[in-house]
Length: 240
Ligand SMILES: O=C1O[C@H](COP(=O)(O)O)[C@@H](O)[C@H](O)[C@H]1O
Image (cartoon, rainbow, N blue to C red; front, side, top):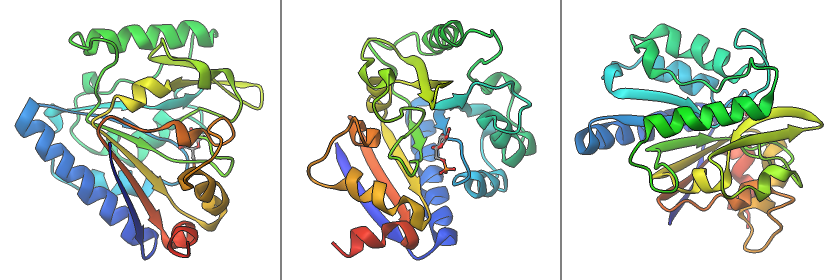
């Protein structure tokens, strides 16, 4: 694993750097493999990044969009990660609808939806031996140290034999990529902004620590790992 930690001056610089990195990864993946596969994160942090990517002229017919996690709500629900990405980015560009691969959330059965999405991924990545290698998985962290929907001390952290599983946020189900799937990516990019993330970040990036308490510590991909932080979040790292 190659690990890079960058502290950017502010959120604007953070978004510009992450946009440029993604544009570089798109170009490399398409020139080497003919397509680019990305899994998106939800929450508030990546929204301006999606808006910035919507302004780019890209080979949309070679780009496939997935999600690393999803809230267990219908696709039109205001909490839906899919809805946010569609409004900020996907609905604004000429991306074929067949290239958008949301996590299903409407079976009224999170286990069935997680299994259905795993089957969809297996159809998309027929060559995958044990786990697929996404070109880029975009992640955030919560103030509690969670990433994707891998929450502290939850069963999802133990899952090693599935691609997709059920997350648990305070008793509410979510759908989430598993740790081994994320760790199989060619590149994992964490985007972290705001002072509220400082404490979690300090524990996640420390030499020693408990990954069950700070699940983002489990993310050690076989490819590249980028931590892009704005100064409000990353000053704790600079001060170390
Ligand atoms: O619940 C979630 O939270 C994290 C972090 O969100 P943010 O609002 O603090 O940026 C996010 O990465 C995850 O995808 C989302 O479902």
